[in-house]
Amino acid sequence: MKFKKLTFILTALFALLSNSSIAKERIISIGGDVTEIIYALNAEQDLVGRDSTSLIPEQVKKLPDIGYMRQLNTEGILALKPTKVITTSVAQPSIVLEQLKAAGVTVEQVPLQYTTESVVTKIKRIGEIVGKTKQANILTEEFTNKINAIEKTPLDVKIMFILNRSGSTQMVAGAGTVADTAIRLIGAKNAVGNVARFSPVSQEGVIAANPDLIVITNLTLKSLGNIDNVWNLPGMAMTNAGQQKAVLVVDDIAFLAFGLSIPNELQKIRQAAEQVNKSAVK
Image (cartoon, rainbow, N blue to C red; front, side):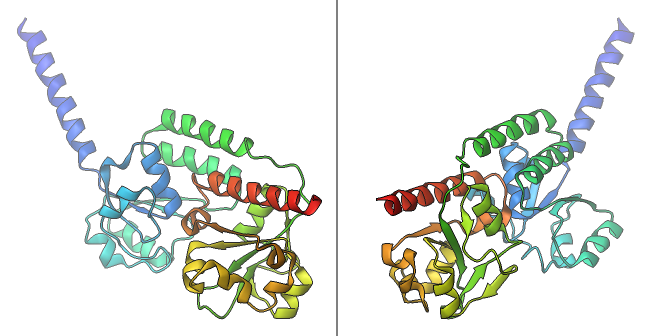
């Protein structure tokens, strides 16, 4: 009996110590896509910090902000005494990540690519890191189902994605951008798919591209002041989109992260494109 009692005590003590060890994990999440997935996996209990792009879900804003993911600061991160940092692969500067490793912090990097396949890979990898593989498999299936539910049949609709952060200089999203990927995923055409990355565009360029639908982000709308000012941009009023006042506002963070929220934004763009297509047929 004494042996059994001792075994029971030791087992309970071991479990207590193990749980204490787990509770001591202190994680900083860098990248809105990473943070969103951690919360979706119900693994946020050990988070002690996040970067400025981590804004989804709303409760994450209560965590200390260590700054922009492309301008990381070693001292600011170490001040939160993390044991682990889970970061997107585009986090910079890389020397900060090396300094964190040298300080004994475990640094886990996950890919950020603008494909639905990369999101699936990311979910599974983060699931492994936080010990939520079963939940990650369920989340992966849910994400894939949402993507598959989006209608992808080809539409003869040209979409122009515009960024305007200064109120005067407009940039359009060409090939190799997240916006270009989104447009192709919903079966539409990028009105400026012949240009590379984000590029400035002239009045003549806008007229020549002649988009049927304009897509802007919340920050661009804020920069412009109001939705009607879209048509005051050089050349915009002379396009099909300008004549029909066809414009859609999407979420900046969802596009920046290209994570769990992206299916909702893709669905919005598809529905807007379908509406434009119906109007053109009439």
